[in-house]
Amino acid sequence: MKKISRRSFLAAGAACAAAGVLSACGASSASTAASSGASASSSAQAAPQQPVTLNFWHNYSAQSAENDTLMNTLIPKFQEENPGVTVNAVFHEWADLHDKILVSASSNSLPDVARLDIAWVPEFQKAGILTALDEAMGDFSDSNSALLESAMSTANIEGHYYALALNTNTKIMYYNQQAFDDAGLSAPATMDEFVADVKKLSGKNAAGQQVWGLTEPALAGWNVLPYIWSCGGSITSDDYMKATGYLNSAATVKAVQMLADMYAGGELCGFNSGDTPMTDGFGTGRYMMLLEGPWKTAEMAGAYPDFKYGTCEIPAGEGGSVSVLGGEDIGMFTSANQEVAWKFMQFMTDEFAQEEMAKCGQIPVNINTLQGETVQNADYAPYLEAITTAKARPPVASWSEIDDALTSAMTSIIKDGADVQKTLDTLAQQADALLAE
Image 1 (cartoon, rainbow, N blue to C red):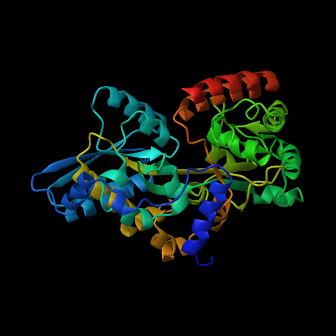
Image 2: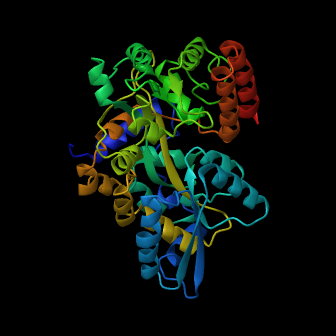
Image 3: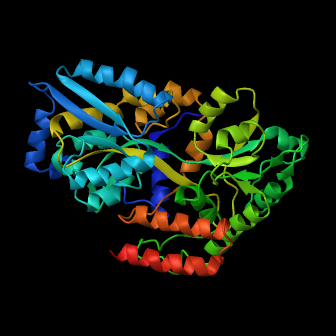
Protein backbone atom coordinates (compact mmCIF):
# COMPACT_ATOMS: atom_id res chain seq x y z
CA MET A 1 0.00 0.00 0.00
CA LYS A 2 1.35 3.38 -0.91
CA LYS A 3 2.41 5.83 1.74
CA ILE A 4 -0.40 8.12 2.87
CA SER A 5 0.38 11.81 3.02
CA ARG A 6 -1.32 14.26 5.33
CA ARG A 7 -2.23 16.31 2.28
CA SER A 8 -4.15 13.42 0.73
CA PHE A 9 -6.25 13.00 3.87
CA LEU A 10 -6.92 16.70 4.18
CA ALA A 11 -7.98 16.72 0.55
CA ALA A 12 -10.36 13.88 1.30
CA GLY A 13 -11.88 15.92 4.09
CA ALA A 14 -12.23 18.88 1.76
CA ALA A 15 -13.96 16.72 -0.83
CA CYS A 16 -16.46 15.53 1.73
CA ALA A 17 -17.11 19.06 2.93
CA ALA A 18 -17.60 20.27 -0.62
CA ALA A 19 -20.27 17.64 -1.05
CA GLY A 20 -22.12 19.22 1.85
CA VAL A 21 -21.97 16.18 4.06
CA LEU A 22 -19.64 17.23 6.82
CA SER A 23 -19.45 20.17 9.13
CA ALA A 24 -16.85 22.80 8.30
CA CYS A 25 -13.28 21.68 8.88
CA GLY A 26 -10.55 23.74 10.42
CA ALA A 27 -8.76 24.21 13.69
CA SER A 28 -9.58 26.84 16.25
CA SER A 29 -6.67 29.01 17.26
CA ALA A 30 -5.35 28.49 20.74
CA SER A 31 -5.55 32.25 21.17
CA THR A 32 -9.35 32.02 21.16
CA ALA A 33 -9.41 29.76 24.21
CA ALA A 34 -10.96 31.28 27.28
CA SER A 35 -8.53 32.23 30.00
CA SER A 36 -10.24 29.76 32.31
CA GLY A 37 -9.68 27.06 29.70
CA ALA A 38 -5.98 27.86 29.54
CA SER A 39 -5.83 27.53 33.30
CA ALA A 40 -7.61 24.18 33.18
CA SER A 41 -5.24 22.96 30.50
CA SER A 42 -2.20 24.04 32.48
CA SER A 43 -3.39 22.15 35.54
CA ALA A 44 -4.03 19.13 33.32
CA GLN A 45 -0.30 18.83 32.70
CA ALA A 46 0.36 17.81 36.29
CA ALA A 47 -0.65 14.49 37.80
CA PRO A 48 -3.56 14.67 40.26
CA GLN A 49 -2.51 15.03 43.88
CA GLN A 50 -5.36 12.90 45.25
CA PRO A 51 -6.68 9.52 44.07
CA VAL A 52 -9.15 10.03 41.22
CA THR A 53 -11.53 7.65 39.47
CA LEU A 54 -12.21 8.45 35.83
CA ASN A 55 -15.47 6.98 34.53
CA PHE A 56 -15.30 6.02 30.85
CA TRP A 57 -18.30 4.57 29.02
CA HIS A 58 -17.72 2.81 25.73
CA ASN A 59 -19.16 0.34 23.24
CA TYR A 60 -16.16 -1.86 22.50
CA SER A 61 -17.80 -5.29 22.39
CA ALA A 62 -17.06 -7.31 25.49
CA GLN A 63 -15.41 -10.20 23.63
CA SER A 64 -13.62 -8.09 21.03
CA ALA A 65 -9.94 -7.50 20.45
CA GLU A 66 -10.59 -3.79 20.96
CA ASN A 67 -11.97 -4.35 24.44
CA ASP A 68 -9.09 -6.67 25.31
CA THR A 69 -6.61 -4.00 24.18
CA LEU A 70 -8.45 -1.29 26.09
CA MET A 71 -8.59 -3.24 29.34
CA ASN A 72 -5.22 -5.01 29.27
CA THR A 73 -2.94 -2.60 27.41
CA LEU A 74 -4.23 0.95 27.21
CA ILE A 75 -5.80 1.50 30.61
CA PRO A 76 -2.87 -0.08 32.51
CA LYS A 77 -0.44 2.14 30.60
CA PHE A 78 -2.49 5.27 31.24
CA GLN A 79 -2.73 4.47 34.95
CA GLU A 80 0.99 3.79 35.10
CA GLU A 81 1.69 7.19 33.53
CA ASN A 82 -0.82 8.90 35.82
CA PRO A 83 -0.31 7.64 39.39
CA GLY A 84 -3.40 8.00 41.52
CA VAL A 85 -5.82 7.72 38.60
CA THR A 86 -8.07 4.70 38.25
CA VAL A 87 -10.03 4.29 35.03
CA ASN A 88 -13.44 2.71 35.50
CA ALA A 89 -14.31 1.51 31.98
CA VAL A 90 -17.94 0.46 31.55
CA PHE A 91 -19.21 -1.32 28.43
CA HIS A 92 -22.66 -0.67 26.97
CA GLU A 93 -24.13 -2.03 23.77
CA TRP A 94 -24.23 0.60 20.99
CA ALA A 95 -27.91 1.56 21.24
CA ASP A 96 -27.94 1.14 25.02
CA LEU A 97 -25.02 3.55 25.37
CA HIS A 98 -26.91 6.30 23.56
CA ASP A 99 -30.01 5.86 25.73
CA LYS A 100 -28.00 5.44 28.93
CA ILE A 101 -26.30 8.78 28.35
CA LEU A 102 -29.63 10.57 27.89
CA VAL A 103 -31.10 8.99 31.02
CA SER A 104 -27.97 9.73 33.05
CA ALA A 105 -27.98 13.35 31.89
CA SER A 106 -31.43 13.84 33.42
CA SER A 107 -30.26 12.35 36.73
CA ASN A 108 -26.87 14.12 36.83
CA SER A 109 -25.01 10.82 36.79
CA LEU A 110 -22.99 11.08 33.59
CA PRO A 111 -19.49 9.62 33.30
CA ASP A 112 -16.46 11.84 32.70
CA VAL A 113 -15.91 10.74 29.09
CA ALA A 114 -17.55 8.41 26.60
CA ARG A 115 -16.95 6.90 23.19
CA LEU A 116 -19.65 8.43 21.00
CA ASP A 117 -20.95 7.50 17.59
CA ILE A 118 -20.24 10.52 15.39
CA ALA A 119 -23.97 10.83 14.67
CA TRP A 120 -24.70 11.43 18.38
CA VAL A 121 -22.47 14.45 18.88
CA PRO A 122 -24.92 17.09 17.53
CA GLU A 123 -27.71 15.68 19.68
CA PHE A 124 -25.67 15.71 22.89
CA GLN A 125 -24.26 19.15 22.09
CA LYS A 126 -27.78 20.53 21.72
CA ALA A 127 -28.67 18.95 25.06
CA GLY A 128 -25.86 20.98 26.62
CA ILE A 129 -23.99 18.04 28.12
CA LEU A 130 -20.75 18.15 26.11
CA THR A 131 -17.76 20.38 26.85
CA ALA A 132 -16.58 22.74 24.11
CA LEU A 133 -12.97 21.58 24.07
CA ASP A 134 -11.56 24.46 22.06
CA GLU A 135 -12.87 26.84 24.73
CA ALA A 136 -12.00 24.78 27.80
CA MET A 137 -8.57 23.43 26.86
CA GLY A 138 -5.74 25.82 26.09
CA ASP A 139 -3.74 23.19 24.21
CA PHE A 140 -6.71 21.93 22.18
CA SER A 141 -5.13 23.09 18.91
CA ASP A 142 -2.17 20.76 19.50
CA SER A 143 -4.44 17.73 19.75
CA ASN A 144 -6.64 18.90 16.90
CA SER A 145 -3.74 19.37 14.48
CA ALA A 146 -2.51 15.82 15.14
CA LEU A 147 -5.77 14.25 13.98
CA LEU A 148 -7.34 13.65 10.58
CA GLU A 149 -9.24 16.79 9.63
CA SER A 150 -12.20 15.04 8.00
CA ALA A 151 -12.67 12.95 11.15
CA MET A 152 -12.40 15.99 13.43
CA SER A 153 -15.06 17.78 11.41
CA THR A 154 -17.63 15.39 12.89
CA ALA A 155 -17.06 17.07 16.28
CA ASN A 156 -17.35 20.63 14.93
CA ILE A 157 -20.74 22.19 15.62
CA GLU A 158 -21.38 25.86 14.98
CA GLY A 159 -17.67 26.64 15.06
CA HIS A 160 -16.73 24.79 18.25
CA TYR A 161 -15.35 21.30 18.87
CA TYR A 162 -17.22 19.08 21.32
CA ALA A 163 -15.10 15.92 21.03
CA LEU A 164 -11.90 14.46 19.64
CA ALA A 165 -12.04 12.02 16.76
CA LEU A 166 -11.21 8.52 17.99
CA ASN A 167 -11.43 6.30 14.93
CA THR A 168 -12.90 6.49 11.44
CA ASN A 169 -14.34 3.97 9.00
CA THR A 170 -16.61 3.38 6.08
CA LYS A 171 -18.03 0.37 4.25
CA ILE A 172 -17.06 -1.38 1.03
CA MET A 173 -18.46 -4.36 -0.88
CA TYR A 174 -17.41 -7.90 0.07
CA TYR A 175 -18.29 -10.69 -2.34
CA ASN A 176 -17.96 -14.49 -2.49
CA GLN A 177 -15.03 -14.97 -4.87
CA GLN A 178 -15.77 -18.62 -5.65
CA ALA A 179 -19.43 -17.96 -6.40
CA PHE A 180 -18.52 -15.08 -8.70
CA ASP A 181 -15.93 -17.20 -10.50
CA ASP A 182 -18.38 -20.08 -10.94
CA ALA A 183 -20.98 -17.69 -12.37
CA GLY A 184 -18.46 -16.02 -14.66
CA LEU A 185 -18.89 -12.69 -12.91
CA SER A 186 -16.46 -9.95 -11.96
CA ALA A 187 -16.91 -7.42 -9.18
CA PRO A 188 -19.86 -5.14 -10.06
CA ALA A 189 -18.74 -1.65 -11.03
CA THR A 190 -22.17 -0.11 -11.59
CA MET A 191 -25.46 -0.28 -9.75
CA ASP A 192 -27.10 -1.95 -12.73
CA GLU A 193 -24.43 -4.69 -12.70
CA PHE A 194 -24.89 -5.05 -8.95
CA VAL A 195 -28.66 -5.56 -9.25
CA ALA A 196 -28.17 -8.14 -12.01
CA ASP A 197 -25.51 -10.00 -10.00
CA VAL A 198 -27.68 -10.11 -6.87
CA LYS A 199 -30.47 -11.66 -8.90
CA LYS A 200 -28.22 -14.17 -10.68
CA LEU A 201 -26.55 -15.37 -7.48
CA SER A 202 -29.77 -15.86 -5.51
CA GLY A 203 -31.72 -19.11 -5.37
CA LYS A 204 -30.60 -22.66 -4.54
CA ASN A 205 -27.01 -23.81 -4.29
CA ALA A 206 -25.66 -27.23 -5.27
CA ALA A 207 -26.68 -28.62 -1.88
CA GLY A 208 -30.24 -27.41 -2.33
CA GLN A 209 -29.90 -24.63 0.23
CA GLN A 210 -31.40 -21.19 -0.24
CA VAL A 211 -28.78 -18.51 -0.89
CA TRP A 212 -29.19 -14.77 -1.14
CA GLY A 213 -27.32 -12.36 -3.38
CA LEU A 214 -27.24 -9.62 -0.73
CA THR A 215 -27.44 -9.38 3.03
CA GLU A 216 -28.07 -6.44 5.33
CA PRO A 217 -28.33 -6.96 9.10
CA ALA A 218 -30.64 -3.97 9.63
CA LEU A 219 -32.62 -1.32 7.77
CA ALA A 220 -31.32 1.79 9.54
CA GLY A 221 -29.58 4.74 7.91
CA TRP A 222 -26.16 3.13 8.35
CA ASN A 223 -27.40 0.25 6.20
CA VAL A 224 -29.54 1.85 3.50
CA LEU A 225 -27.84 5.22 2.94
CA PRO A 226 -25.05 3.88 0.68
CA TYR A 227 -27.68 2.55 -1.74
CA ILE A 228 -29.74 5.75 -1.58
CA TRP A 229 -26.77 8.07 -2.06
CA SER A 230 -25.15 5.99 -4.80
CA CYS A 231 -28.44 5.97 -6.69
CA GLY A 232 -28.55 9.77 -6.51
CA GLY A 233 -31.04 10.04 -3.65
CA SER A 234 -30.71 12.03 -0.45
CA ILE A 235 -32.16 12.51 3.01
CA THR A 236 -32.14 16.27 3.42
CA SER A 237 -31.14 19.45 1.65
CA ASP A 238 -27.47 20.39 1.74
CA ASP A 239 -28.09 22.73 4.66
CA TYR A 240 -29.93 19.97 6.59
CA MET A 241 -33.00 22.18 6.96
CA LYS A 242 -35.53 20.27 4.85
CA ALA A 243 -36.37 16.65 4.00
CA THR A 244 -39.40 17.06 1.74
CA GLY A 245 -38.26 17.01 -1.86
CA TYR A 246 -35.17 15.00 -0.93
CA LEU A 247 -36.15 12.05 1.23
CA ASN A 248 -39.17 11.47 -1.03
CA SER A 249 -37.48 12.44 -4.32
CA ALA A 250 -37.69 10.23 -7.40
CA ALA A 251 -34.08 9.10 -6.95
CA THR A 252 -34.62 8.11 -3.30
CA VAL A 253 -37.84 6.31 -4.17
CA LYS A 254 -36.03 4.39 -6.92
CA ALA A 255 -33.26 3.28 -4.56
CA VAL A 256 -35.66 2.09 -1.88
CA GLN A 257 -37.80 0.33 -4.49
CA MET A 258 -34.66 -1.48 -5.65
CA LEU A 259 -34.16 -2.92 -2.16
CA ALA A 260 -37.84 -3.77 -1.80
CA ASP A 261 -37.79 -5.64 -5.11
CA MET A 262 -34.74 -7.62 -4.00
CA TYR A 263 -36.49 -8.70 -0.81
CA ALA A 264 -39.68 -9.60 -2.65
CA GLY A 265 -37.64 -11.67 -5.08
CA GLY A 266 -35.89 -13.66 -2.36
CA GLU A 267 -32.56 -11.94 -3.09
CA LEU A 268 -32.09 -9.91 0.13
CA CYS A 269 -31.95 -11.29 3.65
CA GLY A 270 -30.37 -10.81 7.06
CA PHE A 271 -32.46 -8.27 9.01
CA ASN A 272 -35.28 -10.54 10.16
CA SER A 273 -35.27 -12.16 13.57
CA GLY A 274 -33.83 -15.65 13.16
CA ASP A 275 -31.86 -14.89 9.99
CA THR A 276 -28.32 -16.24 9.86
CA PRO A 277 -25.85 -13.66 11.21
CA MET A 278 -23.90 -11.82 8.53
CA THR A 279 -20.45 -13.33 9.11
CA ASP A 280 -21.73 -16.88 9.40
CA GLY A 281 -23.98 -16.51 6.38
CA PHE A 282 -21.16 -15.11 4.29
CA GLY A 283 -18.55 -17.60 5.48
CA THR A 284 -20.81 -20.59 4.81
CA GLY A 285 -21.76 -19.43 1.32
CA ARG A 286 -25.37 -18.47 2.05
CA TYR A 287 -24.87 -14.72 1.47
CA MET A 288 -23.08 -13.67 -1.71
CA MET A 289 -22.49 -9.95 -1.13
CA LEU A 290 -22.50 -7.51 1.76
CA LEU A 291 -21.40 -4.00 2.70
CA GLU A 292 -19.13 -3.86 5.72
CA GLY A 293 -16.24 -2.06 7.37
CA PRO A 294 -12.62 -3.01 8.10
CA TRP A 295 -13.57 -5.11 11.12
CA LYS A 296 -15.05 -7.71 8.77
CA THR A 297 -11.56 -8.71 7.60
CA ALA A 298 -10.56 -9.66 11.13
CA GLU A 299 -13.88 -11.42 11.75
CA MET A 300 -13.52 -13.53 8.62
CA ALA A 301 -9.88 -14.34 9.38
CA GLY A 302 -10.87 -15.56 12.82
CA ALA A 303 -14.05 -17.47 11.98
CA TYR A 304 -13.51 -18.55 8.34
CA PRO A 305 -9.78 -18.28 7.59
CA ASP A 306 -9.98 -20.39 4.43
CA PHE A 307 -12.93 -18.58 2.87
CA LYS A 308 -12.01 -16.69 -0.30
CA TYR A 309 -13.64 -13.35 -0.89
CA GLY A 310 -13.00 -10.21 -2.88
CA THR A 311 -13.65 -6.55 -2.11
CA CYS A 312 -14.55 -3.57 -4.24
CA GLU A 313 -16.00 -0.12 -3.88
CA ILE A 314 -19.75 0.30 -3.68
CA PRO A 315 -21.10 0.01 -7.24
CA ALA A 316 -21.66 3.43 -8.79
CA GLY A 317 -25.11 4.70 -9.68
CA GLU A 318 -26.35 8.12 -10.72
CA GLY A 319 -24.86 9.58 -7.55
CA GLY A 320 -21.49 7.87 -7.98
CA SER A 321 -19.96 5.39 -5.53
CA VAL A 322 -20.93 6.79 -2.14
CA SER A 323 -20.48 4.93 1.12
CA VAL A 324 -21.42 6.07 4.61
CA LEU A 325 -18.83 7.71 6.85
CA GLY A 326 -18.63 6.05 10.22
CA GLY A 327 -16.48 6.21 13.26
CA GLU A 328 -16.50 7.29 16.86
CA ASP A 329 -15.45 10.39 18.76
CA ILE A 330 -14.47 10.66 22.41
CA GLY A 331 -16.32 13.39 24.28
CA MET A 332 -16.07 15.03 27.68
CA PHE A 333 -19.25 15.78 29.61
CA THR A 334 -19.78 19.11 31.31
CA SER A 335 -19.82 17.44 34.73
CA ALA A 336 -16.44 15.78 34.19
CA ASN A 337 -13.20 16.13 36.11
CA GLN A 338 -11.68 18.12 33.25
CA GLU A 339 -8.08 17.67 34.32
CA VAL A 340 -8.07 13.88 34.19
CA ALA A 341 -10.67 13.57 31.43
CA TRP A 342 -8.59 15.68 29.04
CA LYS A 343 -5.44 13.71 29.78
CA PHE A 344 -7.29 10.46 29.01
CA MET A 345 -8.74 11.86 25.79
CA GLN A 346 -5.30 12.97 24.66
CA PHE A 347 -3.87 9.57 25.55
CA MET A 348 -6.54 7.72 23.54
CA THR A 349 -5.84 9.83 20.45
CA ASP A 350 -2.04 9.87 20.72
CA GLU A 351 0.15 7.51 18.68
CA PHE A 352 0.53 4.67 21.19
CA ALA A 353 -3.20 4.04 21.75
CA GLN A 354 -4.04 4.64 18.10
CA GLU A 355 -1.37 2.13 17.03
CA GLU A 356 -2.64 -0.52 19.43
CA MET A 357 -6.23 -0.08 18.27
CA ALA A 358 -5.11 -0.16 14.63
CA LYS A 359 -3.81 -3.68 15.29
CA CYS A 360 -7.41 -4.62 16.13
CA GLY A 361 -8.84 -3.35 12.86
CA GLN A 362 -9.69 0.21 13.91
CA ILE A 363 -8.74 2.83 11.30
CA PRO A 364 -6.81 5.46 13.28
CA VAL A 365 -7.32 9.19 13.07
CA ASN A 366 -3.88 10.17 14.34
CA ILE A 367 -1.99 11.32 11.24
CA ASN A 368 1.38 9.92 12.31
CA THR A 369 -0.20 6.55 13.06
CA LEU A 370 -1.85 6.53 9.64
CA GLN A 371 1.62 6.83 8.13
CA GLY A 372 3.06 4.13 10.39
CA GLU A 373 3.98 0.54 9.72
CA THR A 374 0.83 -1.05 11.13
CA VAL A 375 -1.49 0.84 8.79
CA GLN A 376 0.88 0.61 5.84
CA ASN A 377 1.04 -3.18 6.19
CA ALA A 378 -2.69 -3.64 6.82
CA ASP A 379 -5.33 -4.03 4.14
CA TYR A 380 -6.85 -0.60 4.75
CA ALA A 381 -6.38 0.76 1.23
CA PRO A 382 -9.93 0.08 -0.05
CA TYR A 383 -11.47 1.79 2.98
CA LEU A 384 -9.16 4.79 2.85
CA GLU A 385 -10.09 5.23 -0.80
CA ALA A 386 -13.81 4.90 -0.05
CA ILE A 387 -13.57 7.51 2.72
CA THR A 388 -12.73 10.15 0.09
CA THR A 389 -16.29 9.96 -1.31
CA ALA A 390 -18.18 8.75 1.76
CA LYS A 391 -20.89 10.93 3.30
CA ALA A 392 -21.72 11.43 6.95
CA ARG A 393 -25.20 10.91 8.24
CA PRO A 394 -26.90 14.32 8.61
CA PRO A 395 -25.11 16.11 11.49
CA VAL A 396 -28.32 17.27 13.17
CA ALA A 397 -29.44 16.96 16.78
CA SER A 398 -32.57 15.06 15.75
CA TRP A 399 -30.77 12.42 13.70
CA SER A 400 -31.44 9.57 16.16
CA GLU A 401 -35.17 10.24 15.96
CA ILE A 402 -35.06 10.62 12.17
CA ASP A 403 -33.10 7.39 11.92
CA ASP A 404 -35.67 5.55 14.03
CA ALA A 405 -38.43 6.84 11.76
CA LEU A 406 -36.39 5.89 8.68
CA THR A 407 -35.88 2.36 10.00
CA SER A 408 -39.61 1.97 10.63
CA ALA A 409 -40.41 3.25 7.14
CA MET A 410 -37.88 0.93 5.50
CA THR A 411 -39.29 -2.01 7.44
CA SER A 412 -42.81 -1.13 6.37
CA ILE A 413 -41.78 -0.84 2.73
CA ILE A 414 -39.33 -3.72 2.37
CA LYS A 415 -40.85 -6.34 4.68
CA ASP A 416 -44.52 -5.41 4.57
CA GLY A 417 -44.84 -4.15 1.01
CA ALA A 418 -46.02 -0.61 1.79
CA ASP A 419 -46.11 1.85 -1.10
CA VAL A 420 -42.69 3.46 -1.43
CA GLN A 421 -43.75 6.94 -2.54
CA LYS A 422 -46.55 7.34 -0.01
CA THR A 423 -44.43 6.03 2.85
CA LEU A 424 -41.52 8.31 2.02
CA ASP A 425 -43.87 11.28 1.61
CA THR A 426 -45.08 10.73 5.17
CA LEU A 427 -41.53 10.14 6.41
CA ALA A 428 -40.33 13.37 4.82
CA GLN A 429 -43.01 15.33 6.68
CA GLN A 430 -41.97 13.66 9.95
CA ALA A 431 -38.34 14.51 9.27
CA ASP A 432 -39.21 18.13 8.46
CA ALA A 433 -40.89 18.49 11.85
CA LEU A 434 -37.90 16.97 13.63
CA LEU A 435 -35.43 19.19 11.75
CA ALA A 436 -37.43 22.27 12.76
CA GLU A 437 -37.24 21.52 16.49
